[in-house]
Length: 391
Image (cartoon, rainbow, N blue to C red; front, side, top):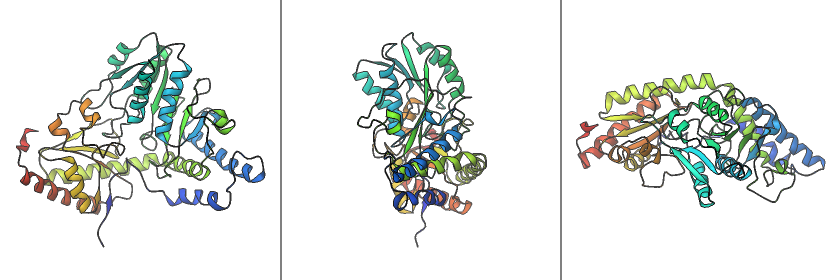
């Protein structure tokens, strides 16, 4: 049987058995509409409430009513950006974000620009870190929101979220973070980190697709962006609750946060072993992102003189799944906006792939991947020989 190895966990993960078992009763046993007043509905709402408590505990929110379930990270990002902008429009119409945010944030900001808002897109350094001095320079009297992602989904760089949030509050500005890639990677404590709004998604942490959450600190005003439900999510987010998905998300975040230290140690070991073996087999590559302040599960590598899409396709033929950027933009042939913002030259950026490890990857799997990667790089450089030593 063909060997298949999945190295695209930053895109999505499999649903764990524990999570699946949590979800199954919601399909055919406790199947009521959580918004209904009868016993079937109350039983379903009890599951939603339990999941809300689990999310609250996982991120150390003050109260469970600060958790609003969504259809995923994209909706949570859109809602945080647009909902807060609209709610505080009388105070000001200026928002600050970074050039390397997920497109769920960038496109939401672009939509606001069409409505007359102004957005400052902060540059980053060569490691992907937002400059604190640039942030301070960008703050204005009419700034109402700063949105900076916790962990970059393409290169894994971890931002100084606590410091940025403190600066925001020193100037009376709300702070939002996209923590979709951070849950399970970092210890997230929204109170200690002074986070006002935070986006999350289940399918990055072995939960189901199509469900996420937005943390909104009590006292923060936010306008709805979906309409049609009076009582759903306390009148803030319309739509019948996805009870199976919510149940799965609650279990997934509970597991991910409980085991994050052990899991990160294993991912770090896998990453280091991979780079050690790769260095023995392949010449002229560079690792993109911060050398220390990074997610151990994400590895972005540029191979000079080859094309990232070609690497991806040839590895796929060998049963190995990687990506060239975030899953939401992987079908685009344009250079990664993240690498571009980090000033990685186009000729290097186009040879980049993202490898994102899972906990089920063994050293034997790594050996196989490196061997196949060596074959692929050798083949592609022979087809299009370029002085690889220029890196």
